[in-house]
Amino acid sequence: ALAILLILTIIGVAAMRTSSLEERMAGNIQDSTYAFEAAESALNKALNESGSISLTTNVTRTYDFGGASATVTTSFKQFAPPKRGSGFSNKEFDSANFDQQSEGSTPSGARSVVHRGVAQIVPKAQ
Image (cartoon, rainbow, N blue to C red; front, side):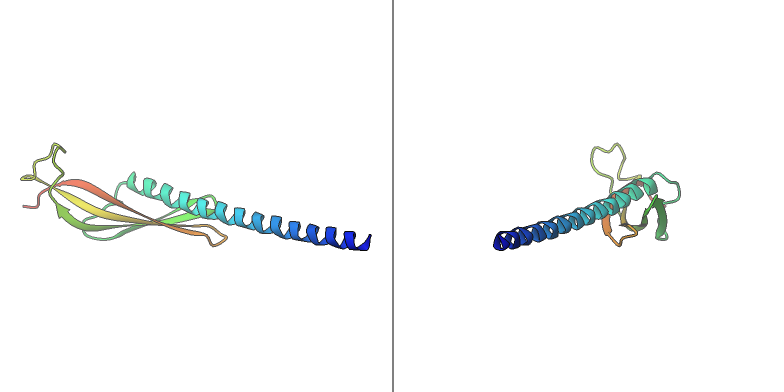
């Protein structure tokens, strides 16, 4: 009877450890997903704000999403001709290419970094 009780106790302790580990893993995944979503949301928010794209300086903006936060840095990369079929003449216009990097983070320390390229049609410099 004691042997059976010992075996059941060992099985119970192992089950508790496994469920505790699974709970921590689920929490970590939830935090990292929250950080990723904050980074994505910040990219969209920055793109819709005036003044977030500059040809001369890097623009950095920080956003708070109720617990998670994200910092977006937009930097100018290069001029290139507009894509064919865009409706813009490459004699009169350029496409200014930018890189946006967003780093989302949560209070628990989860982080996520997202990069996005953005092109803006601008008149050619005279």
